[in-house]
Image 1: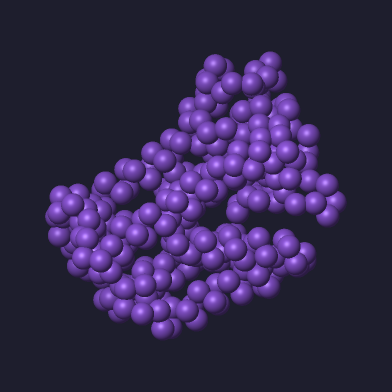
Image 2: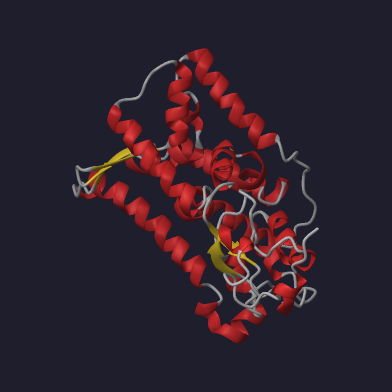
Length: 301
């Protein structure tokens, strides 16, 4: 990225506007479509999905449950019903395949708010950021489970921004507007990606699932990287990129294995050199799986 430039400008020149935003567009369509499915019932009487983001029934057949909500329920000492457990298992398996934090980038409606804050932060050239420990979100994850155990209630869901947005869209936003505004202002002025990248316990939980996920982003053509830094500028968890981008020259493999990667695809979008691509975690173990990688550089230690 040129000094004073905007990330993805070169990609737009090379791939066109749509080519430089395709995964961003798909993510927005996914987030809005999921919202629409939940709102179609209470708003229009079209009950394709009954329930909410924590627990739902699709077409009166497919149960889906948030594994974190079930974990909190277990912490309270209550055993979920068989339908809830089945729904939780389905969701768990899904995210173990596609990546836990796909929830954050492709499902969570609050991601639209934090993306907007990050975009405006870059436009206004707001510098500086509060320092958060990488462990903060895990401490908060432990705290909500502890609160559930002590109080015997799933107290977190009362203040979870995601749950509040869904409830607000059905029953009226009210206090939810304040929570959404707080998240936006936090990310805009206090720290870049402060909520999703450092504090959100939901993201922490799905990040743990993502450690074993199959679907991955890889620096498949890392030798073509021209160090423009556009990928770092747009990545919500930019610390995950360097090990794959530079580590491939040290025999570490080009696949991003960190569970914090949200598989948002923005690094693929904004890279004019087409360095990044979707692949699987097994590509690090196969000399043929990732196209464009200079396998001669893969030396064992």
